[in-house]
Image 1 (cartoon, rainbow, N blue to C red):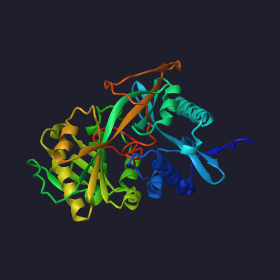
Image 2 (image 1 turned 180 degrees about the vertical axis):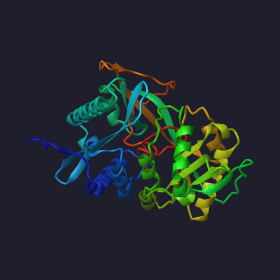
Image 3 (image 1 turned 135 degrees about the vertical axis):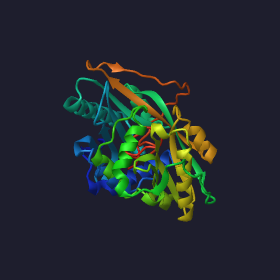
Image 4 (image 1 turned 120 degrees about the vertical axis):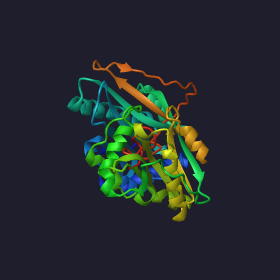
Length: 362
């Protein structure tokens, strides 16, 4: 009896129900706390920075058994980075599938690199959850190594707490699309020196703030008298998680403050506004992701507000020099675990918290 061979092809919007079913099957097998719905997946596929040729999926009859996609940075200095997402159905995890995935990643990243940034090094990164074990061996066999660690943090919203007033000269307003470009400028400035960061282009930013999961009524900005954005907190809500868990949570996807306004408590003030607005609208909890190597004190800030760690993710990286020799770059944490993430803690390519993670949702 021969083993059926999957058919590989790019993802399309018609695939989102089968794609969501693949996530649900994997979540039952190795819980990560993520429940991915069709709305988020449609947002992903409509991302202007994700062409069809940067996606692939494996099918047995009408069932999706694997997917992968690659988000390539528009800009590069000495390294051209791409963020990988990949997932294989628990019943289809075998040597042939792992080889096909690694071959696709190599061919797709090499082609994108040659088309745009062939004169600098190429790096592919993927986020790794501590419970996802099988693909860790796949990544190791493909030359990937752990380089960075992130955590998901969560808290209950039990009361609408008043937040501190902003420092003199600033006013706090809910996000409106009239502030979209000013927020993009502030975002690029706030994350300019953060690990792995690249500037977000106007079309990608509009895609982010027009996504079905983005919640402008829960997102807040601190504006200068000139209507420049000094600090921002952006929030999303993922209906699939609410439907699956019965718990209504907001996700704080982006927190940032421009250099001139740091050390004045703006992040805490805006997070307080977001939590209070969520409480008033019936949200029961909140989530946020953070880089454990963040130098701005974000982990301490979130812990002080009431967030606690619930999940850990590792960034696995494979870097290739111009001569295609792999470069292994290790981080500073010694508590390595052989695990692999399918998506980032922020569920997509364009969203971040206080760090330059892609992916996570838009």
